Length: 260
Ligand code: NAD
Image (cartoon, rainbow, N blue to C red; front, side, top):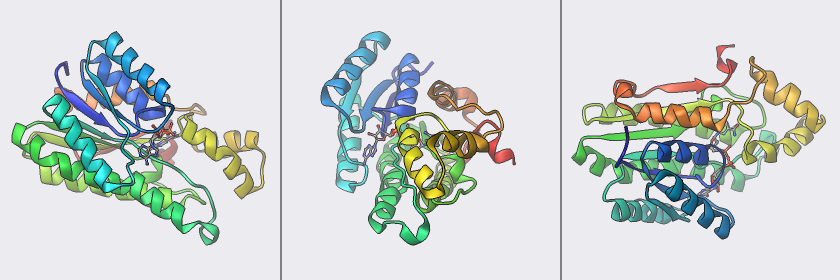
């Protein structure tokens, strides 16, 4: 269905980004992986994906907090593949702390990686997508792009910001064959979530088991974590022709969390 298309997926060495990369590759999309991690593991991932799915898989180690490295990522992807048809802005980090103790450097890093990087990748990819008359931009926002939780000021601000960016880009690109949508997952058990459990326990003065039961899954009426496979399948659908009229949307995949 998407054979011959090419995608950049920021933050795709782990978690949701990797799940989306796996799903797009399965549908014939060439993949530019990005993110941090052990170089041997990334090398292995690159080779496995290419072999199993018979697509081109490249890797760029650009730091999504650095605009010139983001520019290099887009340039290199265009050079390797000839085009970037699908852009998935997924790289993200988290820091959990009360606002009066929230470290300013963490605020800056979260705004840069979770929000500003999507501005840069989008501004750098837009002209070529317009020229070709086809594009799919998928921003991995969060349920925290729609509602807030305490102790996550930077993350909630960045995710609300990316929902706004999604709408603006959708309007600007509406007549150019380009859609721009945000996926808003509830909790997915990835390294990002695992790492915040001890901090949340400390901030709230409860045990880590209580964080999973009373904080994470308390928000999700289904009492189940979202899976990366479910998010990958949604990304593939958003890239399909069937989704050509879905644009500017923020789609919750949160077990009913934001229905409250
Ligand atoms: P993760 O920690 O498993 O993966 C994050 C990815 O981003 C990794 O590949 C990491 O190397 C990369 N990354 C981090 N900083 C980077 C930087 N400066 N430059 C380039 N790459 C960088 O996390 P995840 O849970 O898969 O999160 C992915 C996205 O999904 C994030 O935007 C996150 O906010 C969002 N999200 C996650 C959840 C969840 O419950 N896990 C829920 C809603 C939204």
